[in-house]
Length: 403
Image (cartoon, rainbow, N blue to C red):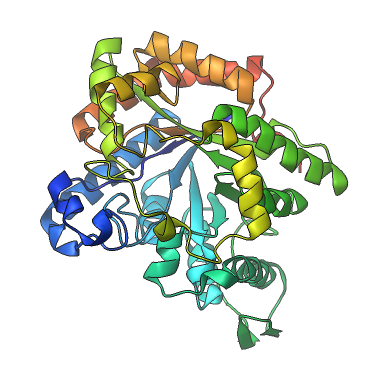
């Protein structure tokens, strides 16, 4: 099993009142950047990089980064820049980018060059993930949401061809036109770096992903729904001639470890002011999914998949102490001592059977000190147990199975 460590690198030095007084009370897209303190940001960037470097040293197989824009909930506005730093300062772990939002790039060839450099600097450790991006990215870059999927697929095809076909050649597509495609810097890995696709289960993306033989990483999706979504991928894979296994599936889950269950429960609640934002004010729906962003059929199928879970999400909506208790009881977030965490992780792995596990260790108000203690306990007890579980349950990762 492939274990990768993740955090959204949140900035939380603002108040719920700040959010509620912003345009449409949104912590993303329109939350005024006057609330950002660059000096504090400098401290956080360096702390987050320190945590990733330590994660490489203690045995994580991958360092997962993501990218969002116009939001304090994720400081990864230039994910590839962070990746380039880690490519030089780490030694063993894969640099897993989940992922670059392709539709917002007007020049995919520049992205192809950046990723090739990261692959070379890291000596071939890049895993290049691509995403459609949220509606926030669409609004922030003034990209037409109607063409989001078309731009995603065409940008992907252009990047892959630029990595695998000697140039120069010409590209005349619907959204991208280049007289000369000839990026001189090309990836170290051949024929190209591994490509993984993360998401929350868009049926159309699942089918496209299976057709390309790309592993799909489910981002904290409801466990019951995840099993249903895996069947969509599996059916699409069979239609193009292969039987998918654990190596084709990944799952991201928040896991925080402390010396005692009580300490982990107390500290772990900091997750709730991470990617949901301080004050946990629900975001306007059209910010995340502008008109035209999803097809009618895609929306219909997603609603059908999630119909049993269509209620206020305790991770992203308003919540009190009782709500946090329910989150922990349902294992939407796994917190506890090493012994408790190992037990809960085993239950999750037995049900979902992913060959890739994203371990979201910290976010929100979880301090750097508590994060480092979490990572120390993971090194001592949790990571070895997870590795053993992967072997015992027959959960090979993508690098353990011949392509």
